[in-house]
Amino acid sequence: MCGITGLLNTNNAPADLSIVQGMTDLLAHRGPDGDGLYKDGALGLGHRRLAIIDLSDASAQPITSEDGRYTLTYNGELYNYKEIRQELIHKGHSFHSSGDTEVFLKALIQWGEKALLRFNGMFAFALWDTKEKTLLLGRDRFGVKPVYYAQLKNTFIFASEIKAFNAHPEFRTQLNKQGLAEYLTFQNFLSDQTLYEDAKLLPQGSFLRVSQIGIIGRPVQYWDFNFQEPINPPSKSELLDELDFLFQQAVKRQLVSDVDVGAYLSGGIDSGSITAIAAKNLPYMKTFTVGFDLSSASGVELAFDERANAEYMSYVFKTEQYESVLKSGDMERALPKLVYHQEEPRVGQCYPNFYAAKLASAFGKVVLSGGGGDELFGGYPWRYYRAAGKSNFNDYVDTYYDFWQRLIPNDSFKNILAPIWDEVSHVNTKDIFKNVFNGAHPKKLAPEDCLNMSLYFEAKTFLNGLLVMEDKLSMAHSLETRLPFLDNDLVDFAMRLPAYMKVGSLHEVVSLDENEANGKTNKYYQKTKDGKLALREVMQRHLPAKVTNEIKQGFSAPDASWFKGESIDFVRERLIDDESSGIYDVLDFDTTKLLVNEHLTGKQNRRLLIWSLLYLDQWWKINTPNTATSTAEP
Image (tube, rainbow, N blue to C red; front, top):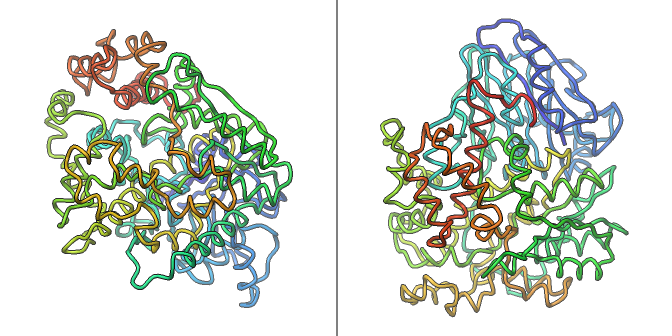
């Protein structure tokens, strides 16, 4: 696991390696085990290394082919690299290292872009062809590893993180106002936009070609999610057996490493299932749990601490368990470093993930995570049923779009953006939502079609945001996070698993009246036990029943209580006591104050909005001109 950087001067000027070195240095946290540079005329590549497989210098990067034509800078892990290596040996290739980097390079040489479909793993890369003078930039199919790019006046630049761009004199840390409107709608970016005017995120499952005159066309999508109801599926028992086999295979594949591998253990079914299988193959495996001080919590937040279940599973699977307990002040302490490392806000409060990575990194370089289980196997039925009865695409979009407007009430959106409304009024966020589907949908929708569209949407957007966040916050601590649920074979299986094995009978949902459909106590919600029915049933073979029968609990701190309790002074100081704060150059102070006070006085739960505003305030302090920039960690 590593950090990659590079530039290609589109005016054919020789690459300045001091700039590339500066970009690479800003990613030192991603790879403290080594660095490297490469130059060919207008092209410069940089690399920071976190050594996981083949710890020798034979796998140092950038790596160049024997004939000197191709040079690769690569970030990631291929879990099937040994199989690909054998295939390449049969085709006449020889190897000088024992790791996956050389395999990745020679697979691209052998098969070109088609090699990307052979890779089972997570990766971002740049491949330079000295003969054609072109750069190939790409990401893994699910988007576990990010890569950003920017076309500046005379230079194309790319990197694993946007902060590397600060080493280039042409890059500006200017706010992307249209991106801000998108973020304040979805608490996420559904397009390739970021919070930075000049920086874009290469879409997952895509590659981009760049020549010495600039970007060649648009990113090319080589793979996409495809959730479909199967025709004549196997029996339920056969599908459950296949799921069991594929899940165990996925976990075992991701244990390949020349350093110790640990696991997050939240107390839920996803991380618990991974720990159960991994512990059978790794004696004395270390597990990591973050809990919360609930002394000032109330309501549903009283269930947010899952340490009891995690400790029980650690006992059952005989792991070496480590725990950390977060209090309200921990958010305030983490915020400057967190925003520096995460760069662009995504999908809700993430400081618990920051502390979880900090805990795990104290004991090793690699940790397994249960990310992806909900998005693939139907873990959010209270979302899906809202649009399950729609019979055409436009009605589905209207309903699900309304649900995913997470932060600002409709009647306040124009008001809160009043200072920049003339610059963002043209941004059609419903079209942004609709464009996620790329025009692919049945003309007439059955409930199963609606579920599969929701799963597709969330895999492309919500999961994507989670993955970007997890990458940044783990690599901030020089930690590699692996996600067994995002194994190619397991994902392919999940996409063809019948709807009834994920969330029960969706036809029941269509008959619910509006009051039932808006509550979490309706008969459908109770029957599905929070979805993932097939996964729960299979994991009864590996986990205690008290775990598989638990209602889903997200990894969240009791912020609704903390923001109007122990952290209220911090919230007031940052958001409503200082009208001169930089964010009020783009947000209306009175509207913001009104919405924040609705939470502080208990009228509305606006914890998501308050987190986002705190994040934006800190982002502004780091990135705006005439203040400290993100070239130095706080």
